[in-house]
Length: 257
Image (tube, rainbow, N blue to C red):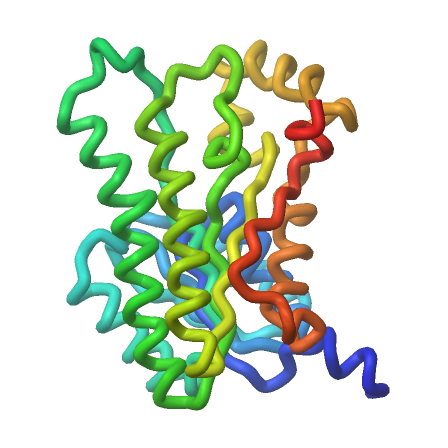
């Protein structure tokens, strides 16, 4: 392996991915395994990890699945500890677990608002906190948080003030942790995906809306989960060793309009 290949390799490192049972989380776990990392797959107890485990095996990787609700700090700490026990010292993490839904602001219940923040914002913080503690023990690491272009712009036709503001908070959370942990050797970055062909956006009931997502994107289509996972992989590797506090748009040019 030459020097450039080494920079883009995760060989022998251990990482975790939340939301790893499907969508961007699944694609990211497979990409990390393909780059040589051992991967802890983290998702709810109700999640089916079989497709992710099979895909990791196909690329010759090693993974293990761990049940965890990211809104529960004790469960997050336990997941990190279990991953380290089974796979090795944690130095890589991708926080992809999240939910999305919509409602007009005047009709949105406090419960709906709070649930969004609990998962999409507080859950990211709790994961970063547990991951950061582990990485400090090991001399550093790299964390990537999945935010959204909705944290940068307001999506036309989508009434989701809770989602937009929670994702904006993730971007600022990422930058704040990047500065706080820079001297600890931990890089923290965010990816802001545009419209992506995940199971959430491929449901029959949103088929017409998904067509509009593609029309509104300059590249004329939604991203595949793999097209989000590969920039995440870059941010995890030493090829991005001087990149921290970034919020990288991967949106097919959507925010250029």
